[in-house]
Amino acid sequence: MTNTASPIEGIDPRIRLKITQGVATITISQPEKRNAVAPPMWDAIALLFEHCSVNEDVRAVIFTGEGDAFCSGSDVGEIELSNDMASGLARLKRGNRMIRAIYNCEKPVIAAVRGAATGVGWSLAMACDFVLAADNAKFGGGFLKLGLIPDGGAIFFLSRILGEARAKELVYTSRFVLADEAVSLGLALEVIPVTEMDVKVTSFANELATKATTGIALAKRMFRASIAPGIEQFFEQEELAQVCAKKTNDFQEGVNAFQNKRPVVFSGT
Image 1 (spheres, rainbow, N blue to C red):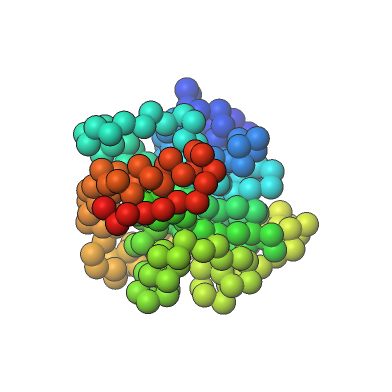
Image 2 (image 1 turned 135 degrees about the vertical axis):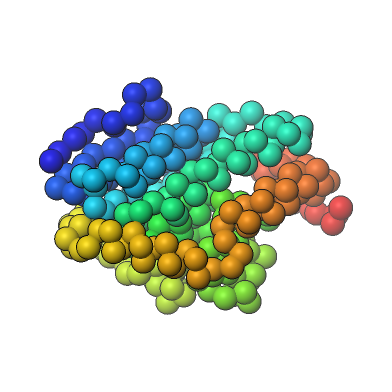
């Protein structure tokens, strides 16, 4: 079966779905912005993963970005930034629905990462079951450069994969991780030459699509159940912490320094 059209009418066209022989490919298609994702795209990603989770024609999912980046984070140009706590919390919950839909998808999900997976883009990749990294892949958060905490479940995923000390080092320094280091740390499964990505990722997805789909779904539930606290409880704390971070002077300084392309000088308040 092949379906090149998204199955849900009215969703953002910058998120595309194709289903071929049991493998669904969900593609972020905003290459001119390095696949930065705006709120309507968050909703579309959530809807398509929820659809794939229950669609019997789907037995594996590939998640990728069009062009030379996976996802460079949130598209701040399309986000209404408000200092109002209620609207900020609602926006975080909207974004976290996207992460939750990927993480809870009943089918095996492969992130095919070319170029940047940064900001919430890194969380999108880590929410998948497997990350296959092109040799030009680059991972990083960068939230603390703006005086914010990582969101999108980044600390949840990093601490689970790396352990607390290494996760703290990456979060506190906000440094980038390249493909080879990502594999050595366990953040990616394999480094693949960028010219071979499509073939290798499709081959892996096709293999997963031949496995016991219900058995994989049950195993995924057991993996999720083995983690305490779970992602739901984690998101409750993350959302409140991020709202508080946006009230600090350091956040205002971080935004101002970024906008004016100058070094940031945090006061610690």
